Length: 119
Image (tube, rainbow, N blue to C red; front, side, top):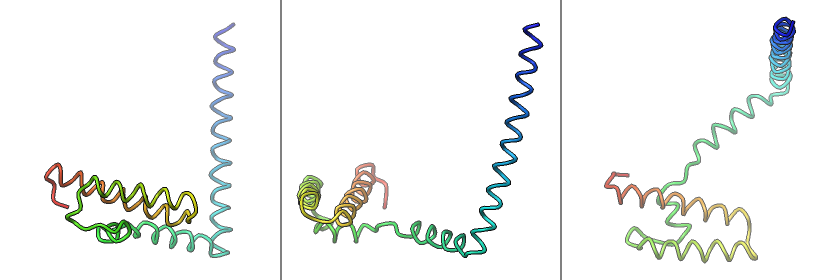
């Protein structure tokens, strides 16, 4: 008796899942069709491509933090802390995020140099 109930329950779950899956796919297709009519899909693709191409270069990171290639890592961290904190208090979130991205970029470069990997 219990085995039959479990089998019926499993069948209901599988059937319900497949119905829900088909409904989701159909809704997604309809959303894509509506978006393409409005030009939203193309705009979204273009924005995604633009964002993917905006990786910060080492040169840009050094300019943001005001450091050179000869600047020791400890000084870079001090510059970062100073700029990040001053923008946290009375600056802009945009500049603060640029400072953070610059530190991340230089951190990766610094790790590559420490490992002996050419950048």
